[in-house]
Length: 258
Image (tube, rainbow, N blue to C red):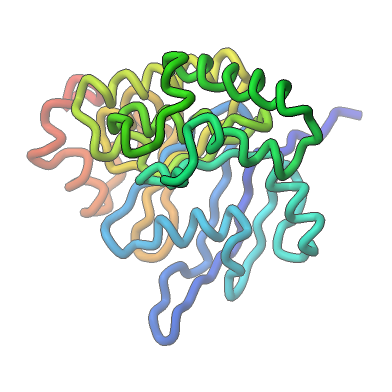
């Protein structure tokens, strides 16, 4: 009997409502193992709410979320904590603790989930910093002493602290100059290949979408329209057409034959 293929993330029939505001209405999401899946949408479309729902940080009004086949919405605190150790997250501004060094920031998930000696903690955290391309002297710096690109890398090192197979990235290149953003894109592709990661990213950066994403989901009309990048750019929905074929997207025409 053939094994049943389990998706990395599945969300079915998600409804999110805040008072009288309906944000998601029967939204579905599927992320396949090993892919880079991009999520885009207009302001107020509920991208961050969807991310929080998938992460188990927000309970939807209806629907269910599964991560590698495990349904999240009915887990108790202990079970949810164990599940969270299997994925890493970065947030748009880095969300590093300003009073801690870079090394200490990376060690936070390790202290919560692992039992290691101080020496082993230091060695493992330094390994994660090397993995994301940060120099050795960055370890003892504080977030305020880092450039924007270095903050992104430090946050990524922390997200990789527990060797997750799944990464959620919220605007991984936001606020970076084009050269620094391209370097982050290249790093993500290398890490995906070397570590066998599945990556889900919220982004508005067309460069990042075309460089990284296998498939893209667009939140329109409170639902998620998903397809391969080649096909999604030709979807007839007006917002999708404007996003992928508007003035700001014209320099990407070579990618989709416009």
